Image (cartoon, rainbow, N blue to C red; front, top):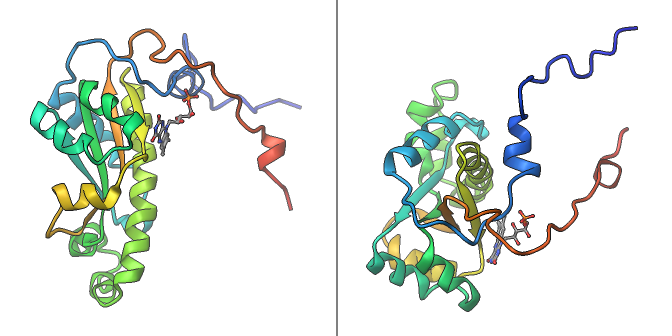
Length: 205
Ligand SMILES: Cc1cc2nc3c(=O)[nH]c(=O)nc-3n(C[C@H](O)[C@H](O)[C@H](O)COP(=O)(O)O)c2cc1C
């Protein structure tokens, strides 16, 4: 019998999955080089194709670069996260847009009445926005790593404070902050912690 378990894996010097998972750390130490807007756009152009429920795509991004913008953000971060926001080459606030349904006529032509139905149920929209924007945040982290960037995600912050500071009058709600840049070496001195194994996380029925 032919063992075809690896038949569909890409071949080459290194698997991309190694570069973005096993070989990548959560980065807190970056070199000084800047991260061009064009590269952030290119990464978004790729990861936006990751699937979301009803193709809702509720992830929104605030790019924080200037000293003034960093300081406005840093005051809402937990104390141990402040220096990281002030020091990273670029920081992205990832947010969920609870008004994502306004785009559904374009994004979900397969479900022509969904936008209207969701307009009347803000709680459902809020949950859907949060779930799917988090999903897209995962795609984004992997996409940034895939071009060699390092990412330091942080949720230790006053999210309501960030919303009031940057998103007043909109449906955007901050989920996390991603510090992004080129890693300095491994980008961290912390020893790698283990992960749960297949047998600990999976059951077969
Ligand atoms: C959603 C999320 C929130 C996090 N929040 C913080 C944070 O507020 N402060 C911090 O120092 N690290 C934070 N981390 C970093 C995690 O502790 C780190 O990703 C994890 O320990 C794995 O580290 P490794 O990738 O180096 O193995 C966060 C990571 C994620 C994915």
